[in-house]
Image (cartoon, rainbow, N blue to C red; front, top):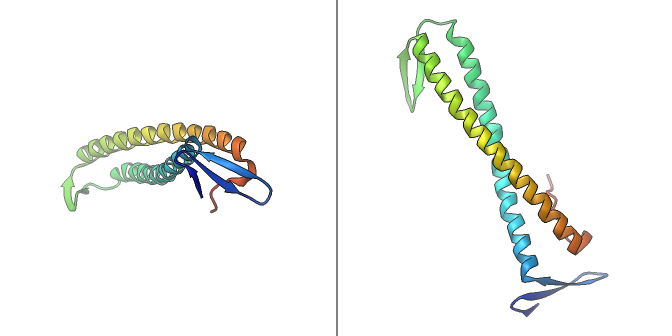
Length: 133
């Protein structure tokens, strides 16, 4: 039902809507950033879990003398000072990654709110931008 290259017509029970190329670009953009939003949500959860595990590992360092630290697929014996240094470096990297992901998440969330408001104003209840979980 393509009316022109830049406009399509959609008929619903009570209204006919002209979907412009700009409308379609906004819908597609919303879809793309929604996928990234969900990816970031999972990444943030994973990073928080990793940070908790690293904090637990830091607490356990003082209990043991010989510590096996995982590097790739290898276990390397290190002393408590070396292990603490390695864990601190890893924690800082995870914290930075987490902060970056949270900033991107917030930016995307704001963009999604803006697009939702625009698309709902244009199409009302005839468009569904909410996720079903």
